[in-house]
Image (cartoon, rainbow, N blue to C red; front, side):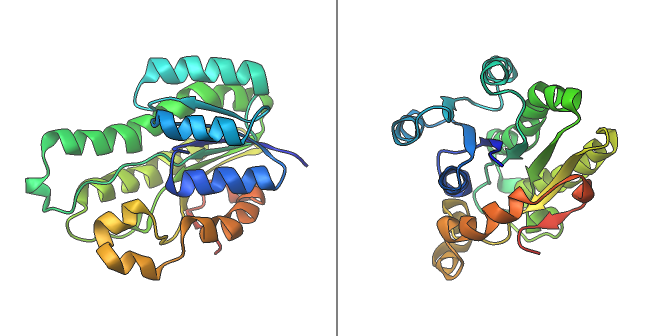
Amino acid sequence: MKKTILITGVSRGLGRAMTEAFIRRGHIVAGCGRSRAAIAELKQAYGPPNRFDVVDVTDDARVAKWAQALLSELGPPDLLLNNAALINRNAPLWEVPAAEFDAVIDVNIKGVANVIRHFVPAMVAKKHGVVCNFSSGWGRATDPFVAPYCASKWAMEGLTQALAQELPRGMAAIPLSPGIIHTEMLRSCFGEEASAYPTAEQWAKEAVPWLLKLGPKDNGQPLTVGE
């Protein structure tokens, strides 16, 4: 059955790979990113009914306008993937500049809340749909030099499990760790060692069919893709 998938952060990495994999499987994807060039590429490659927009998820008013347009055009998503995220440059917490710390928190926590605020009510009205808020292994454990990112992903675990208790029967909210994938974000932490892990495209081949199977039975469960 064809589903409507909403993905934030489609400009690159996991978001871009998931977008392409879902579309190849015949699903409709609506996505956003901050890169005008990347969004233009996606629009050219994948036309209607797919839709891609330049949206900064930290801008609540812009997310509200985007949601209004998408919901009227495509209806509530069957699967909402809050994927957009930033990571701080490797540094001890006391050396992370305030502006950099704020950016991580604004995208990784507030951005997720903004998307939920404007899309989930329509899903609740239908009592249908799955919300996956992307967490991380660093949302369940910690390492040095990525404290702001860890804080944001630990927040995703708590926020999502609380949301799961608020949803009606028939829906699910899942804090989701994608696993370790060779992306630009991972390279910023691991350097050349990142190449030892699967690429985003390799990951998406397994992740997308797995994601499509998620449902009410998974509500509130901290999951890792493929497990």
